[in-house]
Length: 141
Image (tube, rainbow, N blue to C red; front, side, top):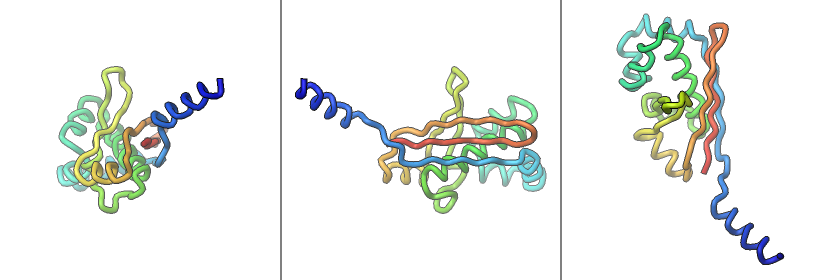
């Protein structure tokens, strides 16, 4: 019985996931709307991928979805431990699984940072209410 416990503990240790970062952010939806209006395509190109913008345009109002995506990017950048220093918002891409669950793809410097941390997955939760968009990210190794 003792031996079984030891083997089980070793197997668990080989497959255990460890939280290596968490991040949370909230964004005022109207602020994203003002930035979109003021800076137009320059704002979109700097902060979002073409796929994200297409997703946002598919559901009105566009600013609501853009704000949720921006909050997600901030939360993920915090889980990476960098914020937006050395990681561009457009290198963190938000998408949805067919089930509707939000997910993240990392590109360029964001992926390099995750690789350096041996990050295997990022869990993401998004919500919005009363003019505020929020995101919570958990990074695991």
